[in-house]
Length: 125
Image (tube, rainbow, N blue to C red):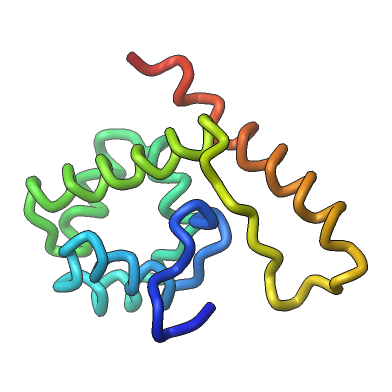
């Protein structure tokens, strides 16, 4: 992904640590960019945060030296992205490593995978 522009928000499942840093800048949490990088927070990690226990959340907040308000902002922005995925408001982007001959197959699988990964949101109020 380009370092010049922010990552595609709806591809957050495959974000690198650098992509997460760009996204943090975009949502006005850029002060946490370096500490997230040091802790290896990538898209897969962000996705897994919805399954964190209270103890894991507190450990994450301490490790990243986050303020509660900033953590809530982070969670709201993640939820916004997941809801957009559920609604199908995404443009699937082929990763740089995928051969062009598989682009149609990749797009179908990526859309199905995204929808299945955020299905837990349907159960939340």
